[in-house]
Image (cartoon, rainbow, N blue to C red; front, top):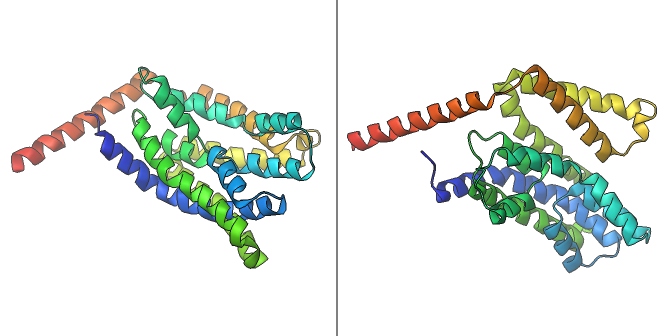
Length: 259
């Protein structure tokens, strides 16, 4: 039994509220950097509205300050944001194969680390309306925070601004912890990923690779290893979805009979 579009959208809104609040705090720091780079409030807001990437935007501001070329800006964004392609590959396996291009493009607009986290952890097929709900509250939080950072960021103490920038990490932990508690394999992969990331920061040669590239390499390698050790068959996932749908149908039947 498939949930209604309105129900999917509301659940997306609900799950997206913590993300939107976290984005509001984190993008405040981005707004301050935009102001220092010479961007107006309108320019900074539009940049955050069409580029939902903290690492990409911070890198772009550094390049803008240095007055570098458009080619350098484009290449840096391609490398830094390449991980979103991997996330999109994963989400493409969760949507209905018959889903149209329009909905696929709509979902792809909101593929961020945090929205990907709540989407990939959702049981069954991913509805585009769930994604729209999460995007509808997360994106305004990101753009509004950038605007506020440009307008009044320099008024706040540096310590408070630094504390706000840590909100993103806490929010991401809140997204992956429930799934890690539910599946010990996910928890183990997360711990190995953290350890490997720390190790790559100090190892010769590897530490000279950009942070975004290191993330991509670790994601591919660890995901491949985990998939080989603990494969998830498509049939078992289908059976789980059918069982869940059957339980919901039985509960709905019981409620109707009681009414």
